[in-house]
Image (cartoon, rainbow, N blue to C red; front, top):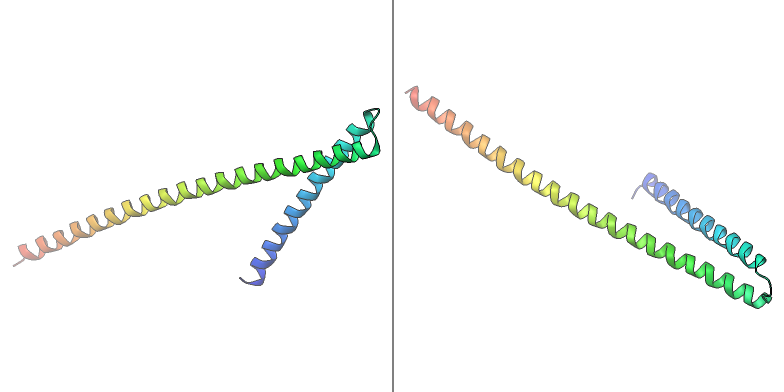
Length: 113
């Protein structure tokens, strides 16, 4: 991998990290806002609810990411299958055209004798 590819991959990794941190930060703010409005919670209960909610958000994000990855893999497999079918058809067509041209050359050369 050359430096350009490494830099592009590094940028993608950084982008993913920043997106994840932004998502978790937003989850922290949502749950803090929620627990602040609920009366009668002890500080320990607030922390437990906040920890549970953020863990749940991580789980949901992981499930969504896994689903997207599975769909991408399925689409890539379909794409590769279509490309192989297209290449096979192209190879067959080129073979038939080549055979037809050879037959034409044989007929032309045979009639000129």
